[in-house]
Image (cartoon, rainbow, N blue to C red):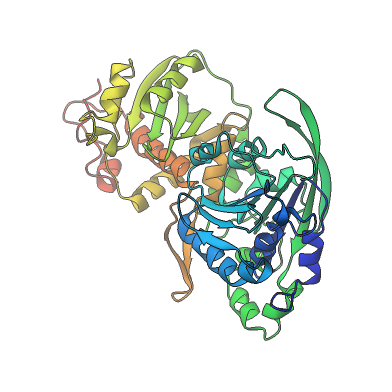
Length: 454
């Protein structure tokens, strides 16, 4: 193809025979281009088969738009007569009847829109935008073929990111190529072994972008940790670029406060929430044991209701104390006129609203309480991951990190911030006419709306 010449690494990706191949690492390696070309199934002539269906996903539609723009330049030249339609899906229809469907999947629950569909090729561009393996693992159930002439493949691209990706593909910290196998349970209960392969992409592998050095110069300006990931393709970067709780988390690990933390039946469990109606709901479960806070459990689900969360509380078997909700839990939904708080109370969960505090003040409170916290490593794994990846946005023009990024890691971090705000109140004994000067000075409105404790 004179209009698109693959690099050596792209050829390696396009010819890979493994079931699941991840093409990832540094920025600028030509990953997205390779993905949209691979979807054509040129190796096995899939695009000429009327039964062939391929699916390409990105997390948001604006991100997907960039891929679609690239296909506008490529697909009609590769397959004369290919036509693009944007209803009901964004899709390319080939003269043979084969289709390549493009869709966004912003929330984990959105992937269930593909229930009942059958694809012979599935690809996700920037898989690292998904903090959990749910979307990827669900899509494996959509990968099947009733046509014996069509083989099935899953493909993805990404920069160094979530731990689950590194573990699934067995990627070394250095980011070098790797291969392995994984056991997958199919929908009918059968267990099969799937071959996996990771192909490292580096800027120097893409001569079309690396030649003049301009893009490399941009990457060289990044902070050290981000530069190691996006320029060198390293996965073993301990410091998440712009991580807000990096030092206090590292200190907790060094002091072995992230370990097995049992449920103390002599103490009640308080819960601290960040709620999401169309987004994720996160809950930290904590016990006050002496001068320590024991974070013994964590819940996070997307697309679930207040009733689902109430059922989870009851199924956990804990003796509960207070349930602290964020301030928006008291807002009435337009459709029902009922608040999130009222729904929970209707299911026997008595709640309190956490005092409103600015994000930066709340982060300060969270950092202050960290030294008192012990975390159950297994049950709080997802919550700890959220704290690890909660970060500030890098503003290149200012040359600094600015406001916290709102992404899939925000929910667990916000719930922990509410824990810090509410738990400080819960730990203080208020008496008639008596206030704690240090707390009043720092957070003058904390005591508002809370009953006096005797």
